[in-house]
Image (cartoon, rainbow, N blue to C red; front, side, top):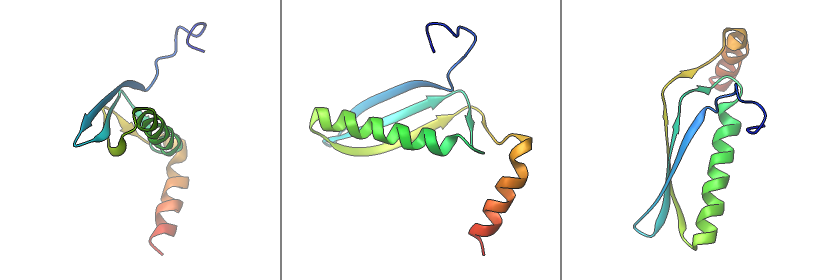
Length: 90
């Protein structure tokens, strides 16, 4: 709630759209991303935003690049992440 929660600082701070070779590319800058539970949802939402903007501009979707200052996994999610990684390598 950006108008009422003044203490919250969004992780994603800039969406930089540009067109190269007829494709809409997107650079995303984030101060942090929680790769334990939240990054996947954030990445899917960013790709959807890029797709929607490309559609309005009648351009193909190009690269989506993400620059993250602090990529992290919270300690309470370590066991879950270890399990997911182990299962992916079985």
